[in-house]
Image 1: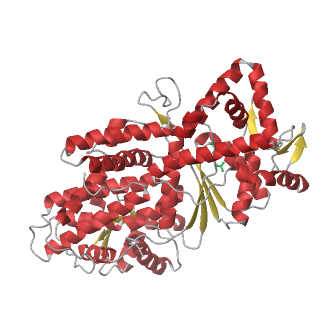
Image 2 (image 1 turned 30 degrees about the vertical axis):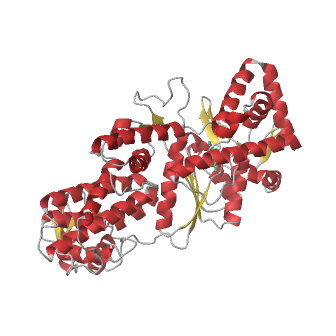
Image 3 (image 1 turned 180 degrees about the vertical axis):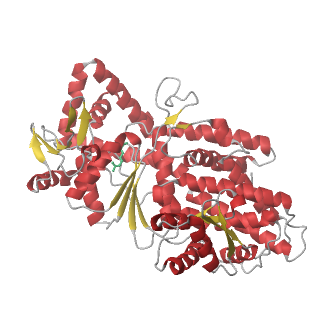
Length: 581
Ligand code: ARG
């Protein structure tokens, strides 16, 4: 049980005694320490529904609550109950954390299966910096869910089937550079795609040629299928390189094409069950009238009022769509993987698609907890969508390369004595960590401004700051003559800075489960920054190696615990810590 849960349960017992029945008594951590460590407004909520005086009720609860050995309680303002945890109780908690591999994090996901659908770039289209958000947020959520005990299936639903293949096939046959393809498949495929795209816009004959290639592919033409397969293999190889560098991994890569042979049957089923109907030759899912227009994803408001906004699942020409594939994918994930939840980490522009998808799936009897985890755009420092000088989308690999170069410069300045290969390794860890952390410390829904100097600052709200904090702690242990065994260590807390450090340490187990309530890794990022700040205040106020026993061992144990929480917390964000910096 976390400290917060323990306070909730003790408060719950007292409230039940006072009002004569069990009621929910939520407790929250307090940001401003002048008000104690934790707080509850339960008495205020109860007093309102019972029309009694909240302060009187709060006082009755405080008189009854048994907080022996744990905390003191006092009434505040209009009827808040504030708790101040006893240093001795914090010491006991810290000792328990030292023996706990999970660092106090409860396994709230145990017994549940979640599919995390993230990254999902489109083959032969550039994987630009916008995809970075899905990849980094999704990977972090998958790591967090795994740590919380969920059975996690990370699935890369790549766009490997679509109209872009008409252009790629035409380009492959007319302007492919085999050497360039071998050296860097993604760049060459993207070049081919871009050139054909431009040519098709200028010349209707090229457009027709592309369409003809696509029709042949869809009809099962052997040559085109062969080229298509090669494109996928090459793209995957290129993508793997990027994922390896980011240390992102997937359990499956079931792209859109995996579901091709299920689509015709699916549409027939939708028609037979009356979930979809024909409209101008196409097959569409319409509103079933069960929701208010403002909440109905199949209705849209236009000048002359509410009108239909159906999801097309088969075009008049017989072709299937993105939505059709996603429906087949939901069925597969539920039937084959027994998914209880599916988390789709995809940008805001696809909001309508997912609302329609979840609604259509529900009507089809596919029930589960489906979430669209949306995110905003990445902006350049001029606050416009991030572009290269030539106006193209910025590519992810270029971002990573530049991040590592800039990190190398920071490290060379800080620590010029490091051997070159170690410095290069550290630069990789710091540069990539900085990009990930900058992303994850933002509220995912706000557009985020990509600012190099800010994300690499050693003394800012950055990965390098946290990595450096970790390095500093480890350097304390390097000075010891014999290895330090933290487990079983007695924790004594005398200084305020010590108590505060433990206060933050025990909150790790409270913060991590809340991340998946609303999919906000930034809660963890902010927590880690707070922990590092608490550590630095402690380290300034409290000598460690020079202290006398038992304080010395106790402080070493706090250092150990801080470094473990920093390392584990950063790992949950997909950020590594270097040994030195
Ligand atoms: N390939 C799509 C895109 O880049 C994202 C796919 C997301 N996943 C899904 N199941 N629809 O826009």
